[in-house]
Length: 249
Image (cartoon, rainbow, N blue to C red):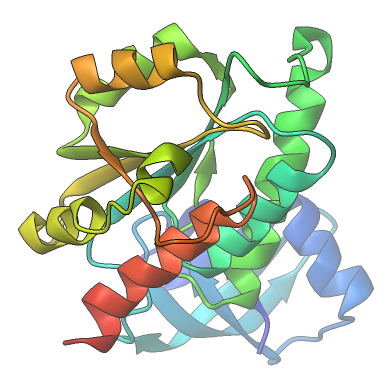
């Protein structure tokens, strides 16, 4: 059954669907009155709905049954990625959404080869957000992750003050055999708390960046004995978080 993230309800038991999702329902899926879909509101409430009205600008769907299944991680994870080359960030956003990330925060790191072009910013962010939306629908998420506008390293440090916990994955810690910080952080966390995890671009973070992160209360951790690529490390971390909070219950 197709799933759609709906911006608003027409009323308590009626959803209003417009723009691209209306086009997808009518033109791509060729649905008719009475066909059923799943609607998710901005608060994460999900319902099986039946199409009730189809107009030139919108689709109205009535709730048939509310869904109580929990598909979200009990803690909120923000993935901060040093801007990587090519389409690696798209991969991180797509797969990170499937694995339960709540937010993506790209940042310009000292070793980022790619340079952020503000002239192309809106188009890029729209594409990233669309990738997150499609991945959230496919993986039956109840929450649509936000892809934030890329920030400077300085602004990353400022934004980090809003989180309960914050860690940085640093390959030198893996080389030195560090294995406890990541697990210890997860053990301390409670439902509803927030975690920011920082990952470097290709080439990793510089010693100075790591020092500044430490100075701003980041815990520095390794992710096992192997050195992971910039697009692999966030997925490893999210998988480990899911195992800790969802499979070990």
